[in-house]
Image (cartoon, rainbow, N blue to C red; front, side, top):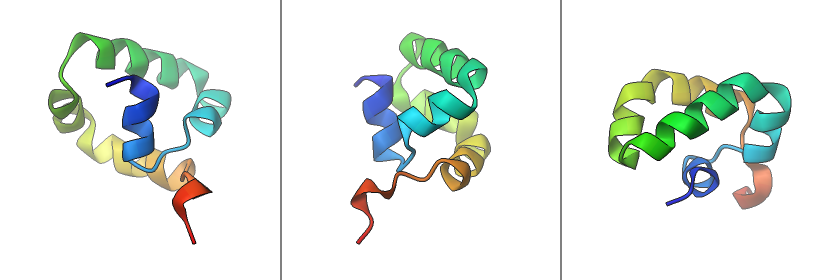
Length: 62
């Protein structure tokens, strides 16, 4: 799974996240490439919720 697909599965807009917080985006992308998606989720669990609230992917919303 690619990092962008992972963000989409978490309802996070990858483009908005990258544009607004490129440093964190690139750091997370690198870490994601080094571990399993479940491990990444466990490590960043509480931070993911904050990022989701900031950069919610509206494409699935009705």
